[in-house]
Length: 187
Image (tube, rainbow, N blue to C red):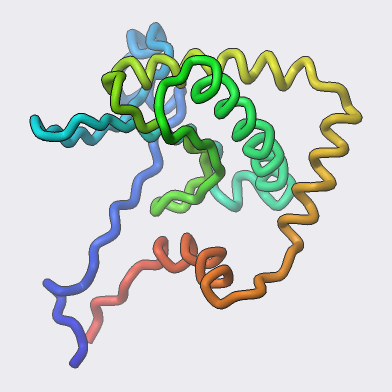
């Protein structure tokens, strides 16, 4: 039987406002914040000793970025993964899971997501360290030579053009598109 309206899955869909849009919504005092708009969902359990933070830095939609912008984001993501792992996992030993990757959120916006899971540090501290890493990562990007960018870009292009060899890989590559589709409630 078809699902009823109540049974139909509901997807959260969000695109946070830009700094200019946030100023229009919240007023000029928002401009003094390091990150003007944050969306946060917290879950707390006294019996859980693990903490995790997932921060997504939004870049734009498909139409905003175009193929070139998405490619540049993938290139940045490629550099970001090794940088974050080296800094947050190896040097600072913040947690047992440290990862950075590009993703398309349910709102259809591309972003760079940083994830840190720790059994020793609280979420506020993890968030602080991710923000500090972002600053050093921007400096790292500025110091890279054009040859380094070209070499890494060739690797990213090969990955983007690689065909899926398993059904699970193919589903994974299209899953974001599936998630952002809206259901039609017409009968």
